[in-house]
Length: 268
Image (cartoon, rainbow, N blue to C red; front, side, top):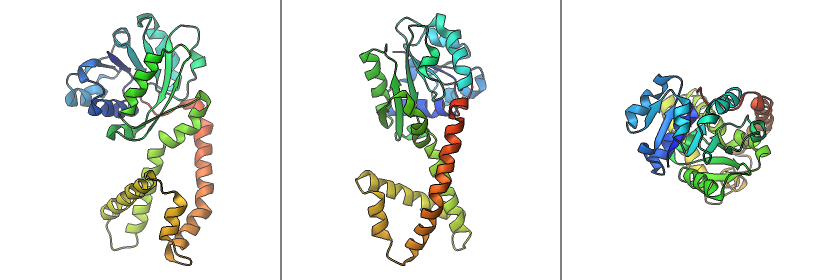
């Protein structure tokens, strides 16, 4: 099975790296197209057997599964330009939450939509997925198995993508920013360098996530750490006062722009 990718920005790069490292894809079965050839230079150095091109139509004509990894405003144009080159059985996968499958009606192309996460690069995270009505069971299973190799797959209704994307695809940036700011605040009090603080906070976040993945809920962890009137409780009171307002503002900012711009995918 030949897998094609049109558009090689940050998300496509992380997605492909994870799929190749997991072994679910072979580098000899992948063709990547980008209008900027230099974007693909690191890919060619790391995975020399991956075929690269600047010809979207060529990539489309050779692919049984074709990922279209471009911005919302580019998606329709790219799909129309490659439409004549697609085989009748091709499975086209949009990596974009800002385009609805209904926007691309008028053909018998088999569309699915996938929102991956940069954490797929290390084989973890949640991939959101939705299939068009004409996608075959075999194509659904193939795509879901592919992404199950780099994390958890959650198949959802299309109208759930916007909020879901904020948690799974945008989420790593928010978590990374929390870790960074926590480390900066600790380092500014003296005694630890920023690098030491960053390493300690990162390990703490990883360990806490591991506890939660084994069934511990946030409230039980807080109860285990915070004693009444203690230092942890004082810190939690500040977070519980300010975080809900801030996170509601973050969600509002994301959702107000989501359909207009879509996620940051890079260019085609």
